[in-house]
Image (cartoon, rainbow, N blue to C red; front, side, top):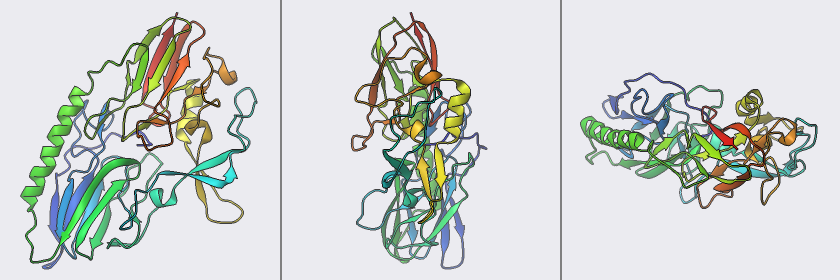
Length: 358
């Protein structure tokens, strides 16, 4: 998830089955946590669920599926026979330009190809029907609100896999069968959804108990579809000169380890995407290079002493645990001066941690 989750009202139904006519019906699937359990799962709690309430929803041909969002996700169907739709792509026809640090020095990534959010992943795609012939998707929102409910009518028998492009391992499927075939009842769907939720709730409680190796900080501790929005440990004590490994093992979530003034970092977190309207061609959404890329060129980050880039800004860039991703899963930070240093995750700015050096 590229954006922080908001507190949500409890009591969402597990699965809704509403007759649309004598010959058609609509089933509803929840995109995100099925229920919000205060202090445990969803909303402002440390843990959340990157999942759909039904891993498989079965309907008759001509019926509809309606997705209701309890967290910031998309519902995106790829074209039959094609692979997953990446969230971020490189725009080789444009470069980052004019991005300076607090000392007035240009960041290293100026004049390098920019990264943009893939229009197929974040913009509304297709119409109101799905038959596998092209990409169809709800699009994403980046203003802190939740997406509006999204409905598709399925006009062809088959199996349709979909995902949230914001959490690409968050997948489910719609199975469409002929009208004479039996499909699960509302009671059956309700039982499946609640079974999934109970497993997620158990994982959310257990996932808090985690200790990484010595001199290591891990962002998240994710099991099943449950993600933990926390650094482990939240406070780390090390001696001057210690090399600290910061890592992400998660498949569904990406994170950053970012040091600097709180207001400066909050401004970056609030502006992780930059809408751009070029002189010619369609508009695009640039991924803020100062957030997504390391603050310094690789292969190794420089030591940190709290004064980097004029105001103490220091960023690993986006890290994730997906082996096929071009982004690394870990970095090493050497702390060269005694002090207390706080950091955050620019993708999930409710996550904070502290390194005490000396």
